[in-house]
Image 1 (cartoon, rainbow over the protein chains, first blue to last red):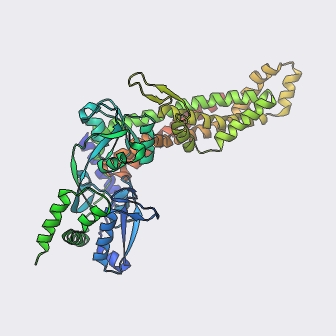
Image 2 (image 1 turned 120 degrees about the vertical axis):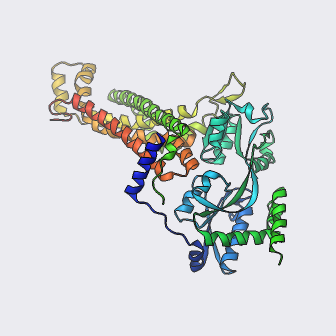
Image 3 (image 1 turned 180 degrees about the vertical axis):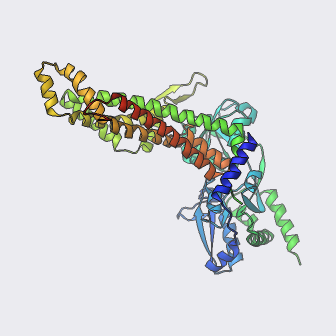
Length: 274
Length: 238
């Protein structure tokens, strides 16, 4: 089965003759004077809209910092809102130069894009549910219906390995609405976002019922083989860490101070010491 | 080199998803088509009775469901009906849950949308009957009902079959919008697969092929029906 499909794939590849364009994003961005960054705009604290409608957040700060490092103080930044479902497509089709949008490092993604230095260790998904909910472990969710988001990387694990019935929506507001409607017993999503949600007045009757089962490093996404660009981005990220910028942004955006970011800041400072 | 890579297709999980998605798409399309045709038939029949208040009611129904996007209708049924009280108590959990599932909401919306289009198509079929035919039937002593059943419907149905084919093939494709309200049909699973594998082009090409195949089968079936029903002067092959 596998071999026949690979043969077909190979035949198709020959037929279509699709080749990868060699990428030199660093040179392109310098000549344009602009770095186009894919960011989230609905994902506090990493990338979201403030009261004035501007996109701000931890990763937006980092993206802007990197752009200034690469292009100098005159460098411009173009922020392009992306969602989980389209960010890699946007990068590989050239609509954006780099992803700073809660991108978890996974082996599957590494096949199609390159990653920068890891700058955050992000908890995986947790489950928000009514305070009356009696489940507290992932194993107890077998057969239950949970709301989720279409395209999340952990969906397959939830349905195939844990036996969860997943009702996946396109966007978060729909999922929250469905949870309140009791269309599902819980909503499985990014842990930090859900924890922030439980602090809101209208979600007072809800709790984090199940804690994350994993922690994944988060990094910037870069086109495959775009090595000069990746080097430059990594240098900029390390510089930001060494200057304590990331710890600063944690404070700015009300994030709990993570040991991971503190460690990396220390290591970066030590590395950059002459 | 980026060739087209279909190695993900060997994963039984993805095969299962594609199969389930395809089956759900077919189920949604065929069920809503059947209901839409029924709505169209009864609606067109009711219009021939020439009852003023009934005509106005049907007119209102058609305007409402033909002139609003099916996607909005689905969202309305999914999120609004439960808010205004269409809820039941789930015996298993004791929670108050919405009465209509996602699939039900999509089915209702597509059936009503298709039904509104069908009423119009059937009505235009009946309206386009030559007056001479109905007058001839009347002079032969047919009653109103017999005239409708034996003369008008047989001819009108052949006149509006091409329009019906159009409506039903469009309805089939409109089922893809049900993914927005979490109906796990073809597009819903396709999205999940290309998010897992990042083989967007490959998944899209495959899903397009599946749609082309299914919709071609549907229109082929309908054209066979058209040919089988044809008689001199009306339908195919005259």
